[in-house]
Length: 89
Ligand SMILES: [Zn+2]
Image (cartoon, rainbow, N blue to C red):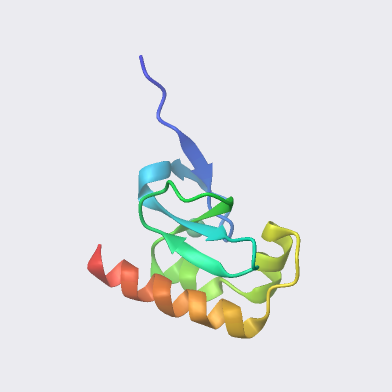
């Protein structure tokens, strides 16, 4: 049987099927993007696409995850994108 790929949400640390999570990538300029296709290059992280986890997402979680300083401004930009995406799901 084929194993379902599991990924860990960076906020709640819950292991979930990859398809149920949103992928965030950081590009070489240090900008965060939402990766709708799951195929973008760069270091990736996963988050539950629900308001519970999105509301708890902050700059320190992102900085820890990507091992570099993520400003609160960049965090807010990303959260706005994720909220918009969540509504389309
Ligand atoms: Zn979560």
